[in-house]
Each structure stands twice: as structure tokens, then as C-alpha cells.
Image (cartoon, rainbow, N blue to C red; front, side, top):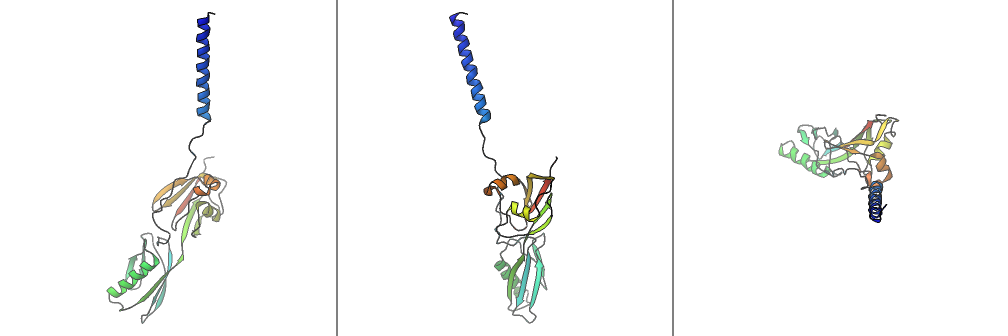
Length: 201
């Protein structure tokens, strides 16, 4: 082997080693950390939502009364004489003012005192959990807490595919990721719906 051939072989070996080392570095390097999609905070928890149960008191009138009502899927509720009112998206105080104004403007009463209290608020958990159904909402309720309140996952649950529906939009979240990092465990709003998929295995 001539010295020229030896030099060429040496260069080729060096190049091959560099390429292999670079490839190993690329394979071993970690990409961006996995994150769950952020749920849009399109409505404050203080705002009334479909499914909310309310206690409405009508006072200061000849026939004072108490009413237990629920906001329906269309965001409305119904009261005596005035029928349906759109309540979703309002605060309790705004709804009180709307009810008072409606009774007065339609000449049922000259004055009326109205108070609105939220009695129950829920999220819904279905699919592969032990006890599917409604879970009472609290301000600190997160995705994983709601699943725990529903009895936890079944053996067939796909824990990496939790579909959260908010305002008719669906988002796929990873519960395992949420369990490892509290920042990836989103807080829920009243009316949110969780569906746990079934694993293929």
C-alpha cells in the first residue's frame, strides 16, 4: 500500500467515524418535552353555564316564591309568567338584574327583589372509568381529580387518550403526563365532559 493510498484510507475512516458519531448524537438527543394541549379559558367559572342548577327567590311581591331551576342545553331557564330567559354566560348578579327587569318591563310587578344562588354544578365523566356519570364541580377540580372521583380507570382504559369537551370543542389529553406534572393537569369548568377511550390492547 502506497503512502498516498494510506492517507486516503485514513481520511475515509475519519469521515466515517464522524458521520457515525453525529448519527448517534442525533438519535440519542431528546426532542421537546411532551405537553398536553391547553384548554381555552373561554368562560370564567363565575359565569353560568348549561347544566347549572339554580335557586331563584322572588320576594317583595304579593306572591313571593322560591324556584329550583336548571339551565338547559340551550343556555336558557324558565320562570312563571315570563317563560324562557337566556342565562348562560351571565353572572348570578347579572341574571338577577335581568329577571327583575323582565318582570317590571312586562308589567307583572312594579318592584320585585330577586336573588339567584348556584346550588349545583357538574362535570361529566364517561367511558372507561369505574363509575361513569356526573361529578360535582369545585374550583380546584382537575382532569385527574375528576377521573379519581369517578372511581379511577378500568383495566381497559387508554390513559393517554382522554377526550375533554368544552363548549362543543374536543381536546385529547394524556392523563399519565398529567399525573407526572401538575402543570399538565388542566382545571375543569362546569359543564366540561370527559370521555376515556378504550385501549386497543
